Image (tube, rainbow, N blue to C red):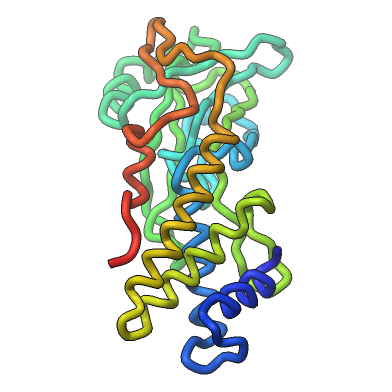
Length: 249
């Protein structure tokens, strides 16, 4: 369903087919908020996106796109030009990375950076206060390709013909979330809102069961930089802190 169709279904639920008490702009905001909340509920597989950046010799800092937040980066790899091998640098904190830069600033023998960290720098534009930069340590001595996986932001619902960035079978979640939020505007509408939020949560649970099941049920993988939890995580995942456990009043 596109934005216009979702809004029509919301109006069917709230019983106002023509904009009056609830304007189209209001309902659009609720639908957009519903998509943001749904996409933040889990690390949904359909949001995992791969991208690359060219890194030249003596270049340590690689600016990230504005939509890529540090918490949404999953993995980073490096491949030297002309080399088939792929290396995985280790992510460290900005403070640790700064210290490592002072230790390896003159190391010209390292073919590949061994670590990286992500820090924020002031943005001259007016749309964002800061942008993020990925810094490699030591500084590369040759040209290479940096590749990483990240969780993309959802498609901006800027028009009635735009579809949400989630599978069609879960579009109903946005309908229920927007309807529940709309009911909160009505006097004594808390009960109706709670019902819609419960239906929204049901769709989220359905999506979790269908997309986060894994064939390997081993919860931990032990190694040099472990433990690492697998992608299918539960409510204890820090990622979940982005989304409140309860909705409505």
